Length: 323
Image (cartoon, rainbow, N blue to C red; front, side, top):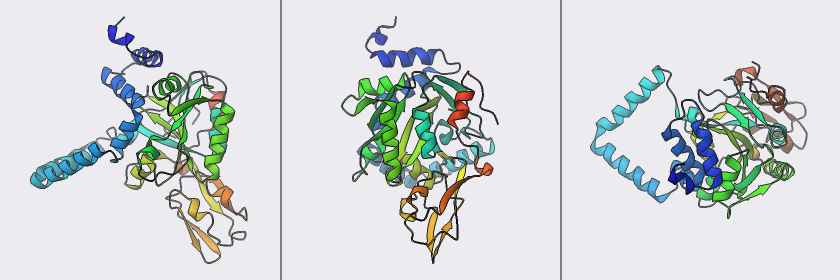
């Protein structure tokens, strides 16, 4: 056994052991995944630019851009070439699938092991589309790294759910002060409470996290790094496959739903509501906020297919979700 292996906690050893079995998973991928899961608060605060070191590096980069304009042009050319070649985008390596509340609840209560790969019509990214749940009842909640990196974060902090092994134990063993193991029923309580606050459930996938789904995050537009990236043109989030629709006769234009839309897709009008479908991600946060029950979700195949837990269970023998 590698002597360095003995210095790792049991969950980290399991992570490294499993990483070695994955075809094409490099040493760099393994170290990246371990770093991400071992130090998520540093990783996310750097990625969102909230860490002092990140702010210093950004200032240095801007200064170099002013001194060396060729740097800027070189980056533009590289982005254009990557786009033309259909290459791997950042969003392919780390992204989330929006889940309506009922599907998020079903996922944390799935109760059986799952091994499959979601097609791009469900999770439309080239990488990190595996849904492999080992010990799906092993769920850990920990303080949201995105909220933790903000000066004035939303509350509560403990809303990120890590599911299955080796991820749940890895987070718990390394962040015991910020994490705790919970039951599926407790996870449901967290999901319902976050839904009541108007926050959005995302099933998160990451290439370095063994190329698969590992967490359900409950996100607000003001703190979430992925939602900020989405607003800035980095398509890190996939639509749920639904869009909101309004019953014009029932809607009175009160605007109560507007304040809960994390994607800026709703606008109150005189005794009515405008839905900007292009912005709507089909999370359903608005639906329960309508006092007149005028809002609902409808399937929109142009936005991809939903991630349906019943289909996961039906095809959980290692196959592919049906198109």
